[in-house]
Image (cartoon, helix red, strand yellow):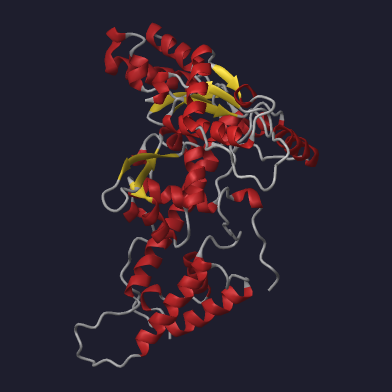
Length: 182
Length: 246
């Protein structure tokens, strides 16, 4: 393994959160972004080839060592770590709307969901999955919400582009069916 | 139909939110009815679906829930509009259902995203990072209150207030400015003070109120921070560092 790859390995081992390529580049400024990327690739492939219990994962616009899926159950059974609590359907609905409409206000979320969403929005803010990003125009300058890096982390996404595109969904506005149901 | 299972009360903090396990709102229920009967969303038999919706919220005991009632009212209005006569060649006629159809399609899209997000989160949860901190992701621990703790706390509060004297007008107005000055002086000396340091043993009701309002005002201004390590523990008043106050 190259010296840079070993340095990155050490840094990624020490960190408790994903580190971005920019952050990693500060370890060895001479390496440059391309050098860091190449070393990260080398590291990831090394862990893959040597068949380790952890893998280097690209997540939340950064990189992080994560345990391999097949060990989740054993680790959890031994209570060394806990699977994150599942999000309620209401929380996921609100997250989906924030993710696609951001920056978005509470009223728009409630209009789409058809139910009061203040409490669920507060809970998402508390869990740092969404945050107030700006204030909107208009009456009362409403708070507008957006997703956080924590959102990407909890969903295992590299960035927001990992979300499915709306036109890829099966219910993306289709022409009406020709048959009359009645 | 049996009474619907309600999700546990911890599901939502603040406000009274009824969240059924089965449906997350009126649009969800409506979509369910449409799917059950394999109806065409874009050409909804509105009279039929309105009746079914009313029957369903009656059965589910939701006829008091405002979100569901609003939808019921909307359906009935559309049903009435559909009954109005119109000329066949009326180009300006706008389908009264179109707004509802748009919302349903939009909501259906959200539900599909929910499935996707849910799968992504479940997959991510199968992998652990280093230094996994349970607190960071778990919800705040549910408040467990023992009756004795409540009584003890109430006694402590009551003990600080002298016997109320009836038939007497409050002798002097609130002195919030004085209390503010006192708090600021104390905080200048020490980074951390207790509520008791401010009110003393035999403070009168007016003093307690003055200090209370002053503390809240200073907290709002970001001069200090209030902490309570556990339910009913003494409140710690901490000087806010200037960086965070900005």
